[in-house]
Length: 304
Image (cartoon, rainbow, N blue to C red; front, top):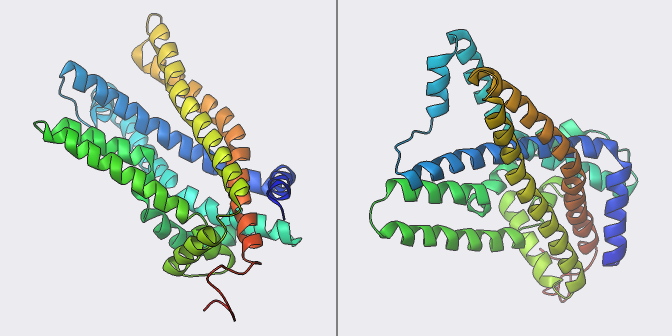
């Protein structure tokens, strides 16, 4: 398949397969929700850092404990903990389901078994993600925030520079390992074997420059849109909360603002689902097509 045909086929699968979009919607929702919470915490810490005010990571729970009934506080605490666990786990589950179902659709097989694909491939996909944990902007931002708040002297700026350098390096390595998840799900390869296969595929087919440029362009659009939404939603929620505080009690205001934020995240996740599924489907179809070709380091015989 040419790059244009591959992109067209990936978009066709994204629009046609509702089960893929359901997995994509759930993954996008939990990822967006987690990013917004992390950004909110960092904005709070940045305000405290600028105003030289001492704050703690659990100030919101301290406030709840002091201002609401204990049963309500306990409910919020348990719900928050369970939600955080789901936010950290579900995107890895969804990755296996989306890749496997997209491959089945491309091969003309029944698009079923998403849950089995998700559970079966969860641990290796989760482990492969942990190799590139510093490639996440939220992780890098959190580490920089911790260094700036708790490290004294000018050395903290040097440490921030080191974190940024590792973030750039991790993103480069993550790009080279772009086919790792596909190797795990489609070929049932081990983590290191799949990473190695991804490196060889990308290096062997760098001449497919138009294809790679299209992928990078698509990914950049998704990241850019995601960044805008993640920044806009907290701003809208805070703005509405500030206005309502003039008319309602703080507790009622926080509940209304929280519900509004939830609705906005649901709406944003609906659109993110298409981009989320499309991006993974493009990489999946590329993996299937490139594996049909011989790697450049193979002269005679099969790759072993």
